[in-house]
Amino acid sequence: MKISVIIPVYNAEKYVSKAVESALQFEEVYEIILVEDKSPDNALEVCKELTEKHDRVKLYQHHDKENHGAGASRNLAIEKSTGDFIAFLDADDYYLPNRFDAEKKLFKNPDVEGVYGAIGVHYYSEKAKEQYYKVFADRLTTVYKKHDPKDVFPGQLNMKGSFGLFSIDALTIRRKSLIKKVKPLFKTHLRLHQDTELLFRSSFYLNFYSGILDEAVAMRGVHENNRITQVDTKKVKPSTSRVMLWREVNSWAENEDSMSQNIKIHIKRMHRSWEIAHAPLLKKWGMIAKYTITDFKNIRSGLYNINFRNELF
Image (cartoon, rainbow, N blue to C red):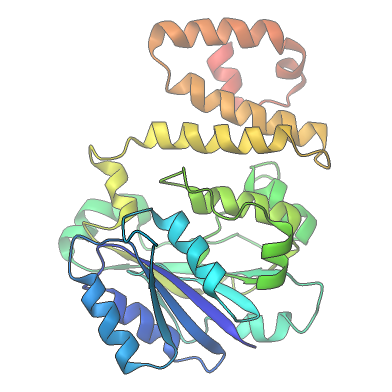
């Protein structure tokens, strides 16, 4: 196996060395591609030191050396990659020694286009644990059980009961399949959840198989300044970012001819439920009235989830 590990780097001078070293432990890792995204800290200098120290580490910046976000940074890294497989890693996270154990076996089957596993949580400080333990606890982020590849996409949409969650740090994809079948790659106008949006689309087009689900293969590093914790500050509104995510997914689904009507309706109600839930009060009741009239048959049929129906009745 020749794996290209992709690491977007922003404001991670304290953590990126650990991320890189965790990937270097594997002989299957052919290259580690860092894309430095105009960090406000000293991350660029740390990345340069890593490239000087390790032959397998490569460093890029965007053409204008400006900040473009994690999605654009991952796209650039995919473009520059030369391995047969793509694995992702955030700069403040790290791999465990079993990271590619399942992949080495599963990818011998040419029908396997992606493998997903579980990740754990590492708190970099007591302050971070105090702030975010209620969000992450010590749980694994994982799909709860093995599923047939055809059930992975509807499972992510909560159409298969209690399915669980993907994490991009535990995902490995055949590069050729990703580039050929998933277009565009990461959508750069989404500053948050661009990885979730890609996971939706890629699991629709590609055959995803479960790897190790009962123990972590990577660790999410939680600290006060990583991107995801910015959701809990004034910098990013979680409601807005989720509405934008489902708007994007719904727009894609509406134009995907090979998708079943039932799934399209399900995605539409997810989009509408988020829009309604986070709309101002006056607008919310206008939207409820509109959707009740236009989609009454589908609402009553049970194709809309219970949360959305609670908004309506």
